[in-house]
Amino acid sequence: MVYVRGNKEDYEGWVQDYGATGWSYNDVLPYFKEIETFYVPEYAHNGYHGNNGEVSVGHAPFHTPSSDAFLAGMAELGYQYVDYNGPTQMGYSRVQLNIKDGRRVSAAKAFILPIVNQRPNLHVTLKSLVTKIAFDEKHAVGVHFERLGASHFVQATREVILSAGALNSPQLLMLSGIGPKAHLEALKIPVLADLPVGQNLQDHLYIGGLAATLEDDVDLDPYDPTAIPVYCASGDGPYSVPVGIEGIAFIRTPISNSTPGHPDGQFLFFAISPASVPGELFHKAIGYKDEVYDKYYLPNRGQPGIQVAGCINNIKSRGEIRLQSKNPSDPPIFDPRYFSDPDDVRTAIQVAREALQVLQSDAMKDLGARLWDIPLPGCEDRSMYSDEYLECVIRHLTHTEWHYGGTCAMGSHDASVVDPRLRVRGVSGLRVIDASVMPVLTTGNINAPTMMIGAKGAAMVLEDNRLTDDDLC
Image 1 (cartoon, rainbow, N blue to C red):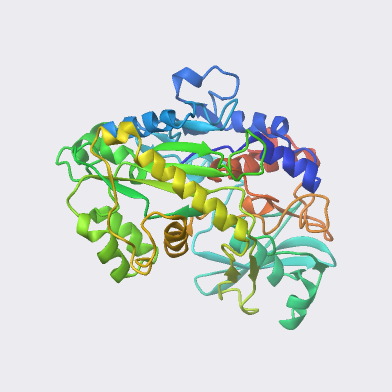
Image 2 (cartoon, rainbow, N blue to C red; image 1 turned 135 degrees about the vertical axis):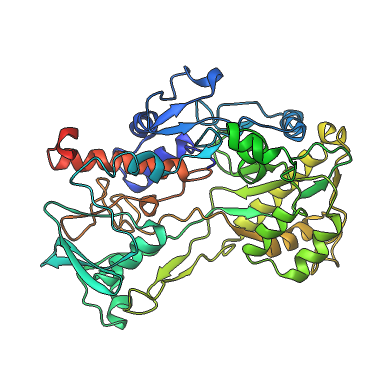
């Protein structure tokens, strides 16, 4: 739900470095505006936002005093309050979310549900697994899929469009004979096109463990007895804030080699203690060991608390996705190779250090904020909050942001899988339209850019097939 378009330079880099002609910032901005209805009054008319799109974007209606302190702390560090989806990204803000009346406006809710019962040419089949793309020579002619134990085939009249995401789109391409030749031959899959499918896997990284307790009870309280009635009645109150995220910032660390307007770090401010019951459920769901959670977080259960999660943008490490077998039901093997590039570790340390500065700002001190004083198990032999200690924390508590992309990269370079019109190279009648086509991840959460890719990709399909919007109905 965190709505971030990315940085202007991300899109200029797609064009200049990867030959993704037609994907500059000026090229994609109209599609961002087209899909958006923007509900932040002070920015609604700055020329960067839409007012008649499917996706509602605005701030949560509820915020806590601790989020005010976060914003003030960022100001103390010298950053400006900005519309990070507008003229400049560098700075801090209340977080923009794709929500309406306190509820998520997902891509499905925005684009599919309103028309699913209105268009006779749209059929959505659930509990279905696509197993292979069918080809006549090198032209895609349809898809095979299984549903409830039965096999089915759907023939394409014009094109097959693959939108299975950065993990499953490459899997399906490889199952269909499009991918690294040596890998496919090892699995005895006939090769249609030798392309670097599944390479270039990228993800943003989330640094946990950067938290503070508060003397004042000014954090978000999900157990407020009035919270549920208020939310059900008006979409307001603590439950209108997704997982407690109230603030966001984009920063440039001292070691960054990017241009001044291109952040390499990001903060997400959580107005809820990681030692709370919801915090425990989240952390254990993503794989924290009971021993680590119980020793590091649990002792502060019952105290008000906050967390500044550091996020690493401009990741240099690259992973890959491979097939486990020829069986479509076997999930692919993906190796993100986090921190395989040492520059990512150095950046993470700097991001963590600046997050600690926010937690130690005068605005936070006014709330009685105190940094977590419990050493992380496994890092006790390092001086608390030294670079060595922070690296140890980072290697223990960093996890995915679920921002996978890059595995079917677009462009005109040798590492591209699709061309700038999103057509798979080496075959015809097949496109990929999802986050996998990003040659490099955008700066920040990729929810918004992925929807933009869908809108721009749809326009390309119409243009290339000489269709109009009327042909969709």
